[in-house]
Length: 295
Ligand SMILES: [Zn+2]
Ligand SMILES: [Zn+2]
Image 1 (tube, rainbow, N blue to C red):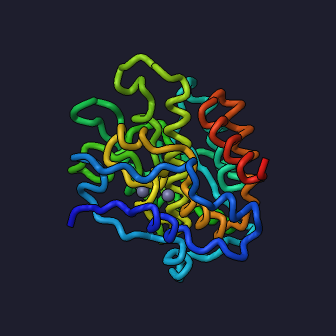
Image 2: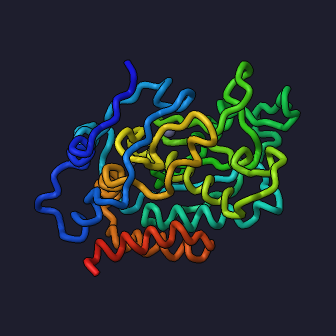
């Protein structure tokens, strides 16, 4: 069955009743004009090939596996293999972004050394680029998961493949084991030999995939309501179309799990995007903060 977009009333229903919530939280979760509906899927887009359940906020809270996180549980980021010098800043930036996005410290683990780890590698037959096998990385991450971890996300500058018949994969996760891994290499315009039109493109894409994968770890499924970083994506142009900020449905899910202060979260993200020089996102957050604070 073809995907049918939710209308405005269904999008509001997906957020759920805001009655009885603290004023600023209720304002932060109101749909308003700052959020766009999910675009109509074109041929080859995720929703023209994949079927998604509509995970409303209410359905999310009814799922037994989605439970509020303990304050002592951490999200860990673990580099897999070494990062080239031109990406030296990226790990620190991902850590800063994640700490703002989840309003809890995102901890960086020492790198998982590929040599001698039993992780299979190969040269991609089309690009000749060295690739690591995700189905070896994920068990290796799961074996060394810290006891206070909510999840461990591996991040690598190597290209990835899931198994021998696939050409490549952007990332993969084992939700039951609370581990995932994603590669930034195909988010780097240099991978395609193209000049870098937007110097923040690699950072935007990497932050988006970190947010998307970590939200999955909290039981948040693909968003079918708004244009949102939790939309499924089949190709890079579709990923690039997604915004950096969560829609109200998914913001509410994440807030329900983590219990953060929404204005504090936006303040931290505003400081991050300002420092990174990503002015359009900083302006969006400033506008939203002004609205939430009623100024
Ligand atoms: Zn996903
Ligand atoms: Zn969403």
